[in-house]
Each structure stands twice: as structure tokens, then as C-alpha cells.
Image (cartoon, rainbow, N blue to C red):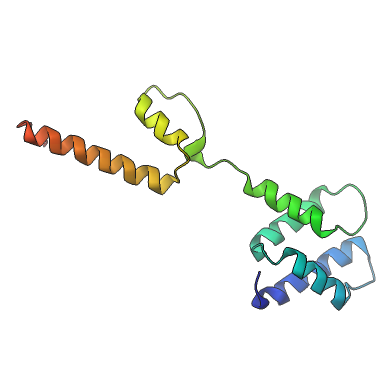
Length: 131
């Protein structure tokens, strides 16, 4: 988060205070300390984690920054589609290995296009016309 996110973050803290300490506001010191603890994360990720906490937290006490960070990290550990191992009879072993390589989807697609271009170039050199 950056300084421009402070207003939005203040609203997040106000929502937490309303739920977990009704009738009391989060003090400026508390807001600042939480902001410092969470500043390395994007405000959207903090908001998402707090919404998730509000829905799932079973103990009625103000969440500590560590609880919010834990949810941010859990949400960030989702496996990109290109890393999911699955069997598709229409994908050869080479393509399946590329998907397991950890490339982003865009990188994987770019690599696939380059491979296809090599094959087309090779076929053209052998006189095969692609229509």
C-alpha cells in the first residue's frame, strides 16, 4: 500500500472496528500500526482478506495483522493454470511439460507460438504448402 491508500485503509479499519468493537473507533495509532504492518501488500489484497475474515472469523475479537497477512498469503498461493498438471489427450508430452514449467500463461502461449512458427518454417523449407 502507498500513502494514497490510507483513506481506503481507514475505511477498512473502521469496518473492522464496527464489527469487532461496536461503538468504538479504531484509534489513529492502531490504524497507523496496522498500515505499517500491512504496507507491503496491495490495498485490494488487504480488502479481500478482511472481507474473508469478516465472513469466516469465529472468535469475536479484533483481528491482528498476522491474521490478515495469513489470508493474503493463502489467497496468493493459488496455482496458476499453466502449472496445473492434468491429462488432456489433445496435448502432447512436450506441451504438458511446458505447462508444468512454471511459465505464466502469456509466456507459455508465446513459447507455443514460437514452436509453431519453427514447425511451419521447417515445413515450408521442405516444400509443404500450408493453406
